[in-house]
Image (tube, rainbow, N blue to C red):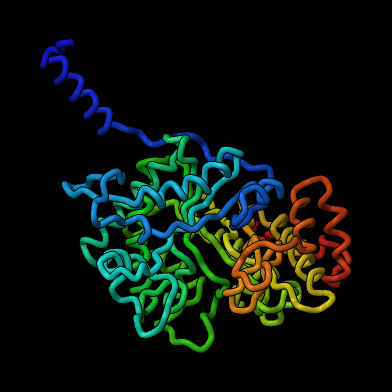
Length: 432
């Protein structure tokens, strides 16, 4: 069949215009029935537990294809073509889609792990990341033009693929940019930096990701990840290796306002003050004062109250909170499992008193043998394995009923473990 050149030209121009005028997905952010979430290892089990939120890690170094392997997807930005690892993308689809198809809000924790391939690491890892010790997560490379270009390309690819415009891949609603960024020595390796410089480098990456997500989705949310340190920083290291979470947040808010405010939100990790002690209600050093050293479940209202400050508001409203990584250790004694379950009940009831909290994403699904001796899982791991599930713990049954009519009765059974007479004794949001 002969098609006139003019018709082909019009068709080509039409496709080009559609490409230029593509609009972001405008679906509103869903409102799940509860805050129950999990960093998912076993999808079927997570569905059986009735979760409404799921956290999944995405490693950007695993996405980068410098050899432009045939069949891998590409993206062209500013005249440069970038190629991405299709096998890794498909493996992520296989995790995301079964969850999002069930209406579960999926949160991507975007990380930059060392790949041990120098040509990739030079692109993706911040060049100031300390290399005098073995580390697991680096800051994003926003210092070099090539690093920024790749970060934008990767961000745009991810944001579009999981925006809802391609249901065959699944949907991501939350983007957590980095990990515990106020600890830029251990958990977000940026090298030695004073507070202002550490924030500046992170803010560059956050803005790139924010712009990328907004091109694809109008209502997906982006989050800054913090550990549990508040007015103090990690013990035993210098001020150029870690900063108080509160100070990082405030300086970030100021810098972002000065360059054009963004709708950032908070992903907090309110582990107990001692990660090896599951008794969240017994934290001895934390208080409800603004000057408290850490924000854990015991004093989580401090974070909520702080976000109501005028200089932290966005369009007159406080930033939203998700609790994206925290768990409770199982002690190897007769009361170990009941203490872990009681800690979860305590934490859940605390969250119910803080309206800014949208999700409580538990970590871990299964005990992990390489987590510094911690046994945080809902499941035990099998002997001589890293994280192969063996059997459920007491907390599994409690977790299953969280957010259901069965919860109140089951949680009440654990009150004696905490020493409380009623959950009403817990402090709530006193910011209004």
